Image 1 (cartoon, rainbow, N blue to C red):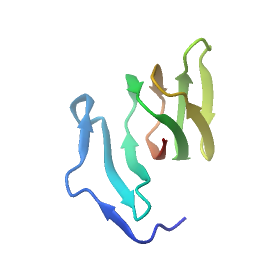
Image 2 (cartoon, rainbow, N blue to C red):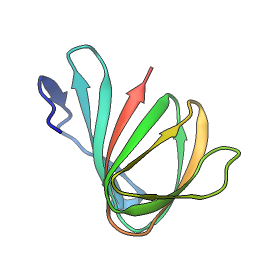
Image 3 (tube, helix red, strand yellow):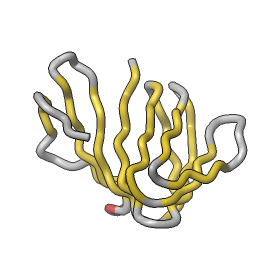
Image 4 (cartoon, rainbow, N blue to C red):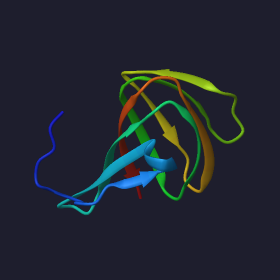
Length: 102
């Protein structure tokens, strides 16, 4: 997939001592995505908006609110509900694209 006509943030979003990194993209219509990498580890996150997580490479497990752990193997997608806490167990380097739904 190729993105055109986007503004890319020069600075990376760096979390968990560099184990999770991403770059923000903003499209002409105001929609936003982030492209990133996650290294092996366990991570807790909080979503504000609904997010569509497209896993391009790697393997992880996700625990969404009121659900059990679910295995995700690339290429696969999962949706994070808005205003929710979720957990990830990353088993191998994960390359992802996150779409923020407003």
